[in-house]
Image (cartoon, rainbow, N blue to C red; front, side, top):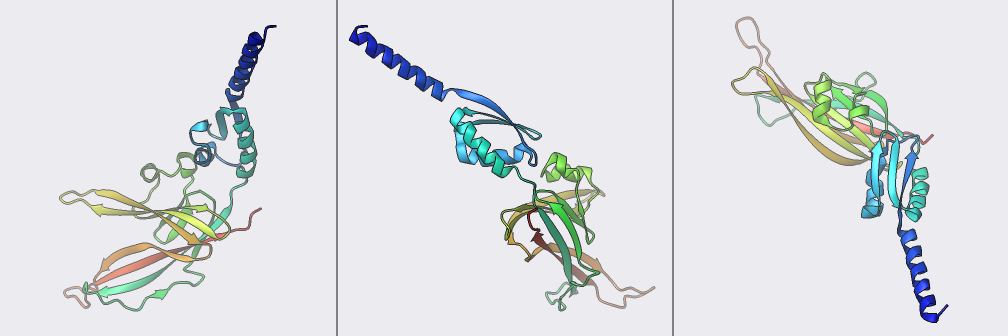
Length: 245
């Protein structure tokens, strides 16, 4: 074979090898413990536009180069582990504000056994706090963190929705939505307003959720015996990360 033809053949072989190396492949990963859409953000942060992802339930489809697919397979073995458990504890302190002035009575934390409520949930699940009680929100396991959707499905007029996300053994990120009903002017119905905040807290640390305001008067049959009081109940929550299984 003449030398020019040998050079041309070599270039063609190199080009074909390069094209084969850069060819994209599809691979299906079946996760055992995690939802596929929960791991998508982590993979996107690592690989960006190098990969294409599709998530349904616990099935993850990845389109990428063969080398990247092998890396992702190894990474998913580390990510796809049983979710951690956390214990949420709830307590409050009460203060009184006479006649609307800015003078509060001394607040006492209610930390006795009868006043502290606790609930153990899985990492990433949603808990509901209302009327001094804390409970799981099963529907959130299907719809995810969508407060507007959750509030249409559960009976909740005011309180908090909480979603803990374990960062490590010592830190937890709390997603908190405060729900408060208020009457609309000139109308008899109520409109729910919600506000979501993110807080990073230490395991075992008490943090403030917010206040619940109430107004009451001490009245007799024909006269008022006491001044009007504004009761403020400040709710706090503590998150304890349980040991990994």
